[in-house]
Image (tube, rainbow over all chains, first blue to last red; front, side, top):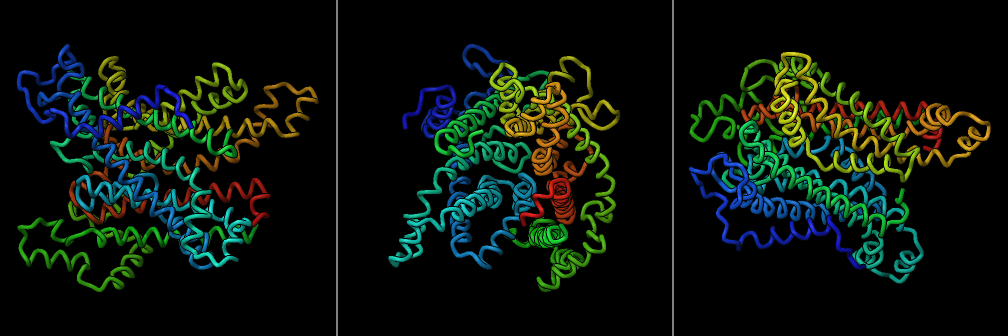
Length: 266
Length: 307
């Protein structure tokens, strides 16, 4: 499958690349330049400086690493955990399935990132706690999808044949079920990455994610809201970055859905 | 219908108990001693034991759970550690502000999404359709903690039309409600469009147009009524996103509702208040979803018959 060279894929590729090399770049996101406090974008620093005289461009780059790491960790954990639970529920059925569905229903009853806000608030702010809190919320979507998909595939001939041949449960799940339910799960993962980027920024905005002085797009917006009249660039730059990244991932998800999953095409 | 009603109510009841249990467990699954977190590490042993006893944390877990659920059933949510007042009173003060904000946001969302979704579906593939879908994509990708500051920047600071924050006058409601409303409208307009496009293929629409009815009559009387059912379900589910979004939006605009109370309580480590806020928001959401499901089953007999 050839990925077309498009605007969204360019943005996502930049995000990946910047996040991966950010650590080895000669950046000083915490360096304070007292004569540059709240200075608007200029030739040498085209995104300007924040309230402590730190370069916004450099903080955005380090923030990209934060959001990338959090998104990858949360979505990987949720993907593996949720898919395992979902496939097992559908495969074994009976009480096991009923209990899983109930647990999923209970977790879905907590709207949006409310549970993640409460959890990271109670566990104390910090990036690891944010990852845990977002994963606790994130696995549910994968579990529900994996369960529904497995139910439709469970009674197909090739699965029955494998069972008749005495293939083990683990092997059936890995070789006969997972490959067939992978497409919708990958699409779900794409949207989950976008959701996690917003959620991490949201937690950091509330002061529950990344702690100062480490940069996060969300905490940059929060810092900026206090200086909006004098330095609107402090809010505009990180917000625009989140918008571009999330929009690109969603567009990529939409085109993936069109390519891989014909049934859901509107 | 009765069977469906019974089954749906039963599930809702179990979910309510599950939600209560998770909220109860919140302070127990957190690593470390909650009392130490609340009082700080330098607190005296006597003080710690006193607080432990006040909160009932010295009792066995099962007893604590029974006490907690029993308290909830009697509308006893405990006492705020910070203001020393009953949590139920603190919550009751905040509920009207959040209800007003949520209600206005839904209204704004419908005012934007309904014409937009209809326009996009009727003129599918046209410039209107593309505009509506661009709006939808942007609305989903703009987080409300950025939308809020943007609106403040434009309408309060540059144009000076509306107040920055607070709840002193009715105009304070506009910006937070627009922030939440546009986010909801983005999803809703997409759903209305998809739902209408599906309905347009039905025989009764073709029959209606064969009878020579005006296109506007067909759209508003025949198509929209049938397309509304799935949209109402989606709306019910999106109320959750709205309520969770209210937590952040209220913080942005210092809107004195349940959401701001939640964040305040988190910062003050006021555990009983945090628990009660999360419980209130989640149970509201469960209740709204139950209502939409029952309304759907009542309006569309196929739902309850298929069970």
